[in-house]
Length: 199
Picture 1: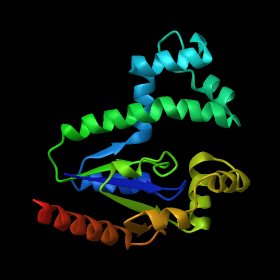
Picture 2: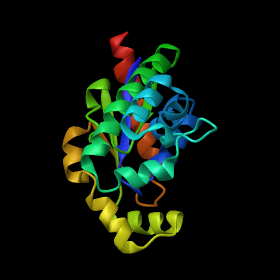
Picture 3: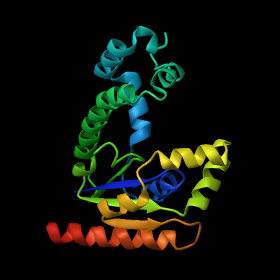
Picture 4: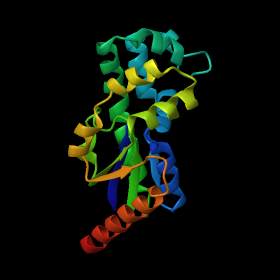
């Protein structure tokens, strides 16, 4: 099996591309969704977060109080680092267990912060999804009902696409045109060829 990282900045359209890949029959691990699940059910994560922030960080129903946590870690880089140090290893373990249960030749892992979380060594290949800035801004304003200034701030807080491109094996240019499917199919064809040669 080849493990493929799928990443891109805010508004790049990586969720849509992940859905297309899943529709083509390839398993895709959505790290944000899985992290949210693990935070609510993994006893080790719960224990560490309660040690850090107190038992009120979880609601009576056992789910994380996301608003409370967001209020605590907002603009607190050390607290963010501590939370990531708890959650990221758990996601990595869960992903590896998930991989062992799969039977397809290509397995995909979708994450906006793949490089920021220093997860690149988990993967055989990495695909970056990149999009021009104006398209990204329009998508996020439409999706999140936010302002241009806030979107630009979020973009600037992420690693630049230029840096990510130097760390990636493939790039998908997702600028609202009909070439995206062709790019996805071409990359999957190349990856399948690589896998075949390794067997």
